[in-house]
Length: 470
Ligand code: PMP
Image (cartoon, rainbow, N blue to C red; front, side, top):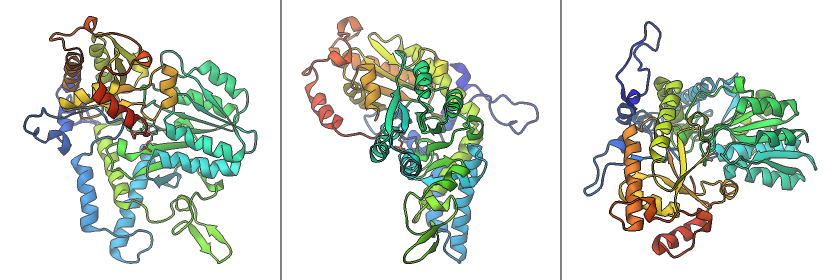
């Protein structure tokens, strides 16, 4: 893994001149104050491995938020005074940065929302209500996050539409043969995730979109786990809609994006009514503003959206190709090291090339929540649960996994700490000084009996009944 921490190699003349070929996670980490705080007394330094839920924020983003509130806080698009003009320009500049980042044909195709959930609900409620007829088919996949399932169920029920799903294969990829068969039924809409948050599987989006279009469907791509990690080009992919969550890509919470092709957005009715989205309001009738304003009713998250623009500047400086290479190298290293752990089951494709920097696993019959709780004692933050993907867990025959996810500020040393931490989990759970899985039972999690780790289990049960955020 030496390549990840190699010094800068300068190339000849391009604008990339001063940039390293590979990303140095240890250097990047110094830009993230939360990751370099001195450890609290009695605690080890923080190893943050839950970026798939929400990333940490670099100084430049934190400073941009502070600067907005300190120096030019004002409502936008409505003030005739200088402060409001400055805020409006900064907000619209952020939209332009986002459009460039995903290669949208125009900034007007980028609508500010809070997150992916809101983006997907917007499409379901606006496009779905206007276009779905009784009997129409809506397709999603078994590996979707709940936010790419529930909105379709809601609108399908309202419109009398039918639902179908693409199942997964045993190694956690989409079953593309079934996808082809479902397309023969002529679905009206196909929604799928670019990258699975529960498995790390990278789906062949371009090929799937082309096939769905050939079958006459509109395609919604959930970009929550792709846009933070590699270059996504909406024109090249030719998706009709794409969702983004800024908080997963170094930006503030509260700023996300819905990309939509302008022709589709123009034809869609508004999602919410109110200020900013109107052209003319009469007591009996209202006409709508053009996109994107038509879909941005009310006061937006101005500072957060500006912060997202700054996060995008930061990612661009790192270089999205380098970001992806870094994560794939870390992911491959993690797979290699973690496979040495006795009794481990790692979910998702075998090949590191088909995966993002997400490693979802179970350790013998040790409950994922116990794994995460014991890792937390070593200040290693991982996620455990169903990852808002209960149908996926059901398909895998389990209720939960522990998930480690890597991002720009992680290093091979973080992987080493994780692996050491997992040996510590064995020691704690088995009471053996030098644990091997011969001392821990290896059974599928689905066959687990209660009672082994009662205190954690009670906490787990209470928690598992909530639809935990991840
Ligand atoms: N889709 C995927 C693939 C996700 O990973 C997530 C968040 N974990 C979401 C949708 C929902 O994102 P948000 O909570 O930002 O709306």
